[in-house]
Image (tube, rainbow, N blue to C red; front, side):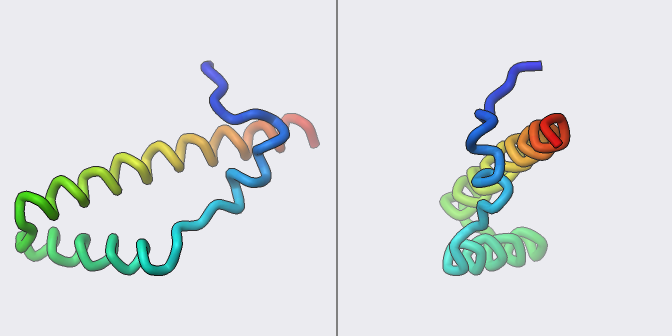
Amino acid sequence: MLRIVLSDKAEAVLRFRVAPELQARIEELAGKSTEDQLTETERAEYAGYVRANKFIAILQRQARQLIGATS
């Protein structure tokens, strides 16, 4: 498996949280998406957030594995 997270950064990756303003925007777009009310621009913006969330989840999974391996 390709390792993306450096061992000395694993804790920081696990502590990462989205800024409240951005979280609110993502939730707004998610609601509009559920209602099929997104503009094309909003759809592209929301798709970017979804991709970023998946990438962050991969990083955090790897960080948990690194921490578990060194415990």
